[in-house]
Image (cartoon, rainbow, N blue to C red):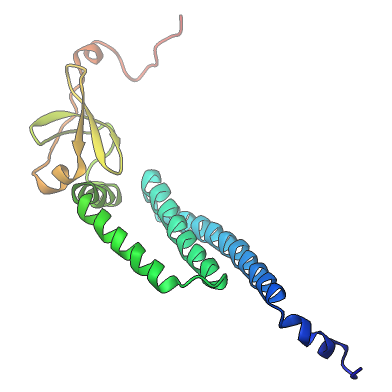
Length: 191
């Protein structure tokens, strides 16, 4: 028996089952810590983007995208801790990402245009615009498309890439036929 009782544990720590158990414990710690860090990072990013008065839709999209990317990094770290060769996994993920980017090129173009529209605020919900042969009031601005309400009551979805690549006419507000006779400053009474 030696003077250091922990030195007696060295032969047991070298057993494969014990080493695998320690690796599993480290992987669980990385998973828990990584999940917590990703969650806190998402919340801090969302708070920072709200502080600069970015559109809530864009804040939600960017923070969830950041959270997802951080979780992928955590998953790769956990697999690396468990002994999985992650270099080939990262290569496969890169190839899959490139294939998806090429196949979703127009959607990614709409996404980038949506971020630009929501970030720079060329127009707001309620504004009347004319773009891509459509004229109407903006009811919603989303990540992939913008929704216009036409004078005849139809709703038109315009891809955001059309808005950023074409001329947009910002028109003065004209009340619709149903709004023309109403006094909009006084709310209607409930029946």
